[in-house]
Image (tube, rainbow, N blue to C red):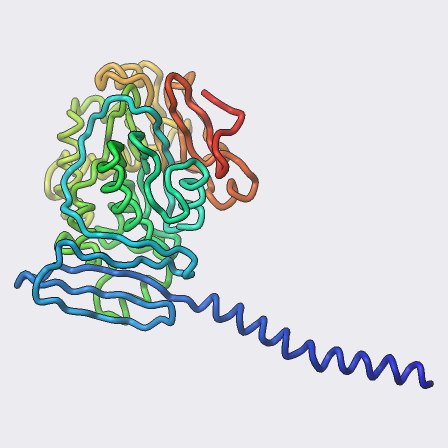
Length: 378
């Protein structure tokens, strides 16, 4: 009987001290989940001033007005979880080149969709950035093949990181190309179907429509308005979704495509359709940010015939086309290596140690993961 009492008393003491600890851990977990960091969103005002809207990690919304635009403003960007922090300095925006010589190295990924954890991981693991989110890729070229917007909670930090890296790469003799994807075109047209709830909440709290956070009068809106849709780097053409037979028949020059896409970027779907037949086509299902027929053979996608692909390659004087948009398990190629698809499930491939993108170095193209080059190459 004494033994039972002793064990019962010990169990009671253990339970007495363990419960507060469990509750504390539960509260800590809840606290981590309640980080709401977002911003800054920078608005350029008609009177030459500037408004900066931010949300700190406690969820407090701040709205700061400056009488004069601070063209060299430096600020800290914090991810939603508070895990990622880096500094950004404003710089003038201009349209990047649409054609580049082949660089020493080229690293390409696609569709980060608001998840900075996986985006930063693959950039670090392939020596594009260091632990301080600084460019260390030298004279090489980074391509983000569209779709930063939607799904995740770190859309803005990823945009600011690309914005920052673009300037740092330029200063080092390298380049960054962020191409427009279908989710950029959707958000800026007010199509918010795939947006995370936190951004709906931000819009409601601030009284600002979400697409207006990226209007052409904002810092990132100005920058987005000058992003390209298609770029040629060496013998490779990069585009978010793909190019099909109808695109070839339009007989378009790449600079023309980039300008036309930018011209209608901040319009609604109806406004784009009304602007011109060309704009309607470019933003439609057979256009460069939506067309899936390069990588899917279901009839509804109007699959591409090899002869048409060869015609596209010949017209644009390239040997391959690199696309994102359509999700695949592990970076496949099509048409004997003439098309490579670099959009994967970033979370799943991170966890399974599968391909996340490609590295082109010299005459070789490697599949890369979060720890660099993998065994497979094209």
